[in-house]
Length: 387
Image (cartoon, rainbow, N blue to C red):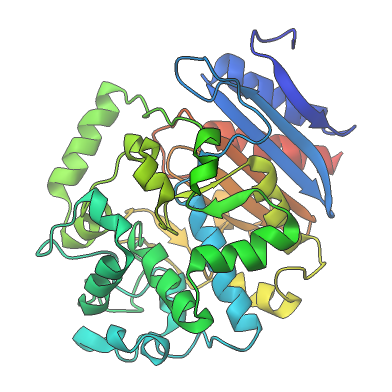
């Protein structure tokens, strides 16, 4: 039992990384953490692997080292790795039209739209237009959703800006992977990413693993936040509404077994913090176990800073990942990269420092990225490396 909190703390922390453990404990004692895990790899070695708390809001099931958590958009980084592996193998040209691999996508003037604009949220296909209302349950029908996206006209001029592909990203990138690899992206990821690294992460969850899943708890909004969110949806234009509200997905949806079993490569990756740290660590440690150094450099190339047409904030995308840029969301290196998920989860890498990390939790916060709990852990990690 840690002296600073009534919640048992588990795991390991290498000498020199004690401030990370302190930040993790502080998240529990001062930032209302329910259940969570955080892990760090440094130059190929796991140096932090911590977990604590409860896998359910009733506090009946302790968080365990193999507790799985839906990490929302942190999943998008995993989908991007699959595309980069195919590009690295010469099977996918990121500058070729999507329609070369997915002929139906040529509809509605998209015949020349390149694959890289899917990865960098610049395709204009931010979602399905409101003329075709979609229910959450319909997201589980892969062919139905990819068919609608193939027919969809871009909602802003492709390549002109970024517009966060909140739901559509996984279907768009995933269908390209499926067409090229001739297997679903969930199976491709399992075979080419998770299995070689022995990383406990999957795109969707098999029936036998449902019992390991933590229960997500909706974020608590202040009255001001709730009012601002209501006003944002009321005033949103067609681009933002297609991306975020057709359908409008909420935290509780991720607790549905049907959601967990589905293949939603933008939204329902399930895994442990250690798995995320191992995967990002394999990108950061120079081993080229997942992709070559050249492919990694290409994946990290900034695609231009702009005010995102969906999120409404300045942002710079690489090819499938956020760049640290001025926000420094993945440590002090502006070229560090990764992806956050709704509510707080995150995975990231800093190849110059040789660091990969993963953070998962079940009490969702209100932010799309850079949750204060995650930032406390990331800042503590890199402070340790400076000493």
